Image (cartoon, rainbow, N blue to C red; front, side):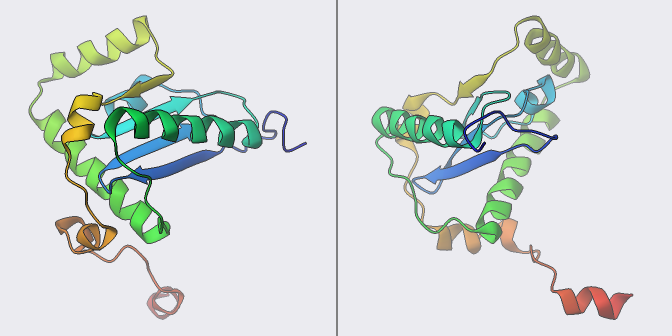
Length: 161
């Protein structure tokens, strides 16, 4: 049933954007230290391993309401696959900068700390999130992360083959 646990290795992740800068994700994945290490600067994640899609959607709505209450930012409408990919590129740019500023021992220490006390949810401080400026998706679409096309047209694939 759709209300039961996901079967056959199928996993669900739900993502929303608040204020154009904040990423909120709910997932039924089991979180690893790598997931934590690759978090965005302005993100919130809640995971519920094995949870069915309908319950996960309800949990995601609760996460959005909580974030909205804590930071005063509204969920954005119009998140599509292209914008999702741009938000992911932006997150990886943030991760790259954060990891480049760390040495191997610091990275290993974060991994060890996570393994010693695994987390199933985390969020950037609501003080930081509340201070973020509102950003329309058009600003994201005109940012540096959008310089490389995110969608490859099918006819481009067939011409290359």
